[in-house]
Length: 286
Length: 338
Image 1 (spheres, rainbow over the protein chains, first blue to last red):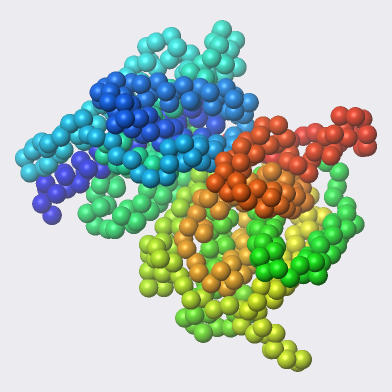
Image 2: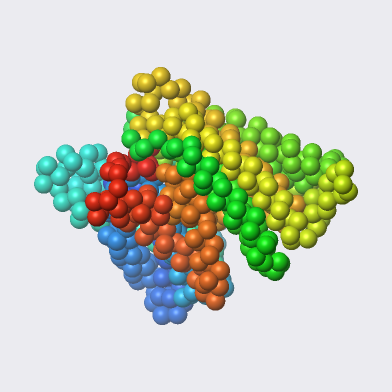
């Protein structure tokens, strides 16, 4: 097999994976803070897509403003969901999981009723392609990858160096101990949930020009995000990045050999294998 | 501890189901009504068996996949291997249960959030297989079509056919009552008590000498068997199978029915399924809002009455100081620490 083909396949895989990593990071952040598995996380990705559609395709805003506003709006929706629903379910994993299935339907049905069921397209901000040796990348993909990487680095710096970020990590480690040290758990949880959802919204807005926007668009990324965080270790942010890159590599190379349905199964097989061999995931805490 | 379920209560409840089931065809012969009643019975079989799995504290998100395995197996046995429907009805649920053994062994190695997610992974893998693999046999995205209805049953007095809505209703009623009798009997047996003990305190049950993995696997496999019974009926009454019949949406619907009624009691899924079926018939003009309403109801019930509708009378009674004092321990999720 020519080496360019392999590099191209890997690059295609990573190009999507880096966006799914954004979704996965939000999911794992929320899990680590509230011990809640939010199956409706993909619906915040969908809201990001619609925000991008209304802000840029309808409202005519430029790409950067669209992205920032979409993140703010979806983050706000996340804070509302946390205040109304998930705050009452901290640590009740099964009940919270069932509630998130209900929230998934509520958000999806609301989107269908208010935005319509037809696919909507969002214009691309950049066009053209870049050639690197024998490998071809569209400028648009390149832009998406760079933005996603910038957001991932930004999240890392925020959690590592700001006071609020440190409070979030403290709550994730031990909520009671954090409260005893004077951390406002309520506020930190709401903010963490909002940031997690804002990341999903950013992913939706980033991919909106590449895929069409529709009320059911959240189903695929949330599944990818779950695969990523189980492989990487639930609650582990570096694990989500590693898991995402691994999934991107496996799926990218997989497309060279098999049908897209078989490639989709590969991710689930990774999950089953990881849960059997190392249930806490590659980088998960024991 | 909640009070021990009394066997006589179980049989009274079963009697109510029997009388209600038999009286439906006496009250109406309208084919639409019979159709609705048949679907309700099928859903009752699915939710009661899902509740049995949940009674050990596991929410198996692949429950509907076992229905799918038996449905496809039965359709293939009848159309490809030339089996009689009745032979397929006996064998296909067993195949679903057989498939559940290795899957249960894998899934039960993990607990808490990992358990829902691995069972969800099974659901998606099987749906993708139904949709994309062995297209010559499973029909692929356009579905498996031309499944024959149940074959006539040759009895000494003549042949009984199962073509009309009424005959299919009776068939489903018999399948449901037979399965419900087993599930209700199990609830009032040692198995029901041990399952409840596992749900409420897995570690404690284990220290008392309960072989927890074996009971969990037993509930998982038995649930798969009864889901398989529903699947065989589904295949030969719908006569078309699509992979989407066994995806996340029908699965969540089963969870909604079960949890709104209350997963802590064997009657919870019955109440939940009937209440929501009646509600969705009354709200037919609001068809577009169905998922929205179901989602909202699910959220409100889980936040305000996590033990479901069946626990409401007891809660009201306690509020006013009537009746026996019961322990208010949450019946759902108590035993699923990660």
